[in-house]
Amino acid sequence: MIKVGDIILSDDIATQKFACDTPVCKGACCVVGDAGAPVSKDEVPVLHKAYHTLKDELRPEAVAVAEKDGVVIGSKEKGYEISCVNKAECIFVNYDEQEVAYCTIQKAFFEGRFKWEKPISCHLYPVRLKKIGGFEYANFEYIPKMCSAACIKAEKEDTYLAEFLERPLVRRYGQDWYDEFLAACNYVREQDA
Image (tube, rainbow, N blue to C red; front, side, top):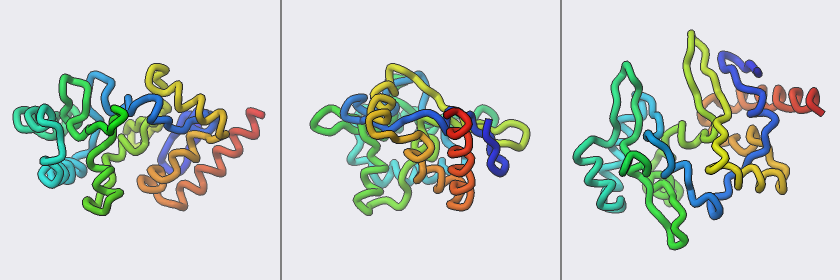
């Protein structure tokens, strides 16, 4: 385990090679699963704003689910998650001409139409966060059916998960934390060599 500040990270976040290959996986992390992306209480109002701003761009079945069940489901006690179509596809998912899933919120962000990129849990995937006893734990959640293409691509490109996730990690914890984290990752890799 690596500890940086109050964050405890699994060693494989430092040692695993990973770089999303969405043309191959087709954006599976947005459409495969049995629950929606976990979101924080602070993200809920932003997701409602995103829904109202982007509603006309969402798929009709996604709008139907959001109108019936809500944009976000859950509670303070159990946690919150984004609603899904058929308990799989995030309501904010859309598809391009090659049938690759993409996030409507992120697309609007990159086009300058929305000022928030996407939930941090989506941005950090395949790393999942969990709070326990005042510490935040970060674990690499490897699902072969979804992530094997990313591992193959990363081996070819020599890209580590820690570097691939630089933007979301800096977004979550700040640049100083990330610099300390990266130094810790390099130390772990040297020990494994």
